[in-house]
Image 1 (cartoon, rainbow, N blue to C red):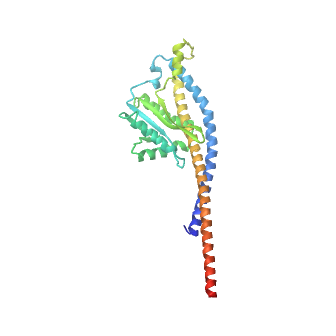
Image 2: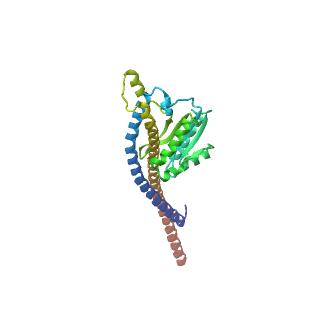
Length: 291
């Protein structure tokens, strides 16, 4: 059994750790509330814009008016791993790295693949797994605004149109609730047609009148929609990060409480044993004096 002084030191250490994890939990909860509101506001707009985009792009007979829908043989694939700049959020970052490596070794094995990362932790974990990261956009979390995200999305879109990449995949944590984050693999480019929209077009003869032309609308709408989708993904991941960290810190705080309970029991046993030994020594000494 450990000594009383050692147990007392461990109790003080665990108590301090519990205070830190509890404070981090509250901070993450506050940030999560704000991030969740941003995701809730963005999702309906992003989904509706995507629906309009698909309707407009499906009516363009040639991809010349929609270079972002050009389907090529996926020989050059870009995978964007979206994680965080900070740790202490459970498997949030490692799960993204695992999903990225699974794509590299599975569906896109043998292809000319390039990996970009958003967040320091994604880059660190991937490099530890011997995966080369061509670019890392960790600065984006310093100020997560649409304008800053649109600049990154615009660069990737330009590379796709120029033929540097045939396909762009985003791997990120989709926010469901504070305790649940879903690993999602989303094709960013080329634009995918919704099967329901295609089926509807085949079953019904729909003739929409567009003013100006669909091509003119697409020139302005498609880039805006893609940048909005990119921003929506990062907001999703950002909310998931704080949800994961809040859950991890909640569990850490509970574990610290359980450890403190066990340490206090052990401390009381050690103290009781010490008192008993002291009483025995006093009694033995008294008996020896009596003689």
